[in-house]
Amino acid sequence: MPLWIPEAYPNSTSNSEKAVAAGLVYRPSGETIRDTFDWEDHPKALGGSLKAEKEAEVLQKWHKRER
Image (spheres, rainbow, N blue to C red):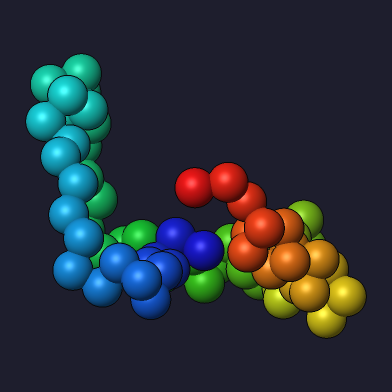
């Protein structure tokens, strides 16, 4: 989920100065979107959405986590 942002953090920001200093280069968003679509069509991609049972399990663990 490369473009997923949790609803609880609609205006969050992060500091990437260390990553940029270490050589991080940002790709154009259009390129990232295109490559994500290409990856999703690849036979070895994760297979799309979670099954309902797995999603429920993940959400249950998420809500029970320590904060």
